[in-house]
Image (cartoon, rainbow, N blue to C red):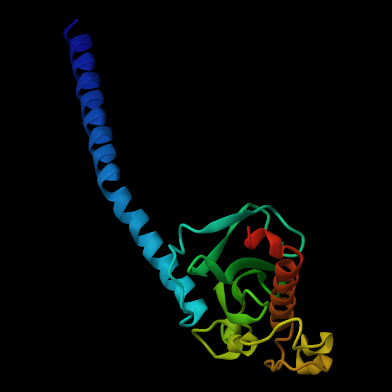
Length: 204
């Protein structure tokens, strides 16, 4: 009987400790969650402003967006946000995330800022798995290659321009690594096509 009581006592103590731990964890989460969310907002705001390259706007950029459902041009498998930069409530630029599914080592996530007239302000690689030292030169931290898109649009460039020089286009590439830039170029061009075909969505 005493052994049975000892077991019950042990179980009770373990249960109590588990309850205390769960409560402590819950309190810690409640206190830290707002900080984590704030850090996410600050990081995203910094990234968006970097791609906007000094563009003047006066709205709450993070809070001004439209939802984009999975789209064939953008290759997004889940719903994404397109952020709208405005000045005096007039659209100045749209920031759209796209995915290049055909990178050498997998998907490449890209963010492109487009002026209201369809010209690219800036482009950034958000995430990629390209081979270090070979295909990772698309990353703005490694080279300035991504800035080649600045100022480009469907109006001021012909179709052949949207290719690497190996394919008679205008984009430089690293020897032995043409798959990566081809994937990025195609994705950015498709982002411009998406904007052109859906411009009314951003001006409502």
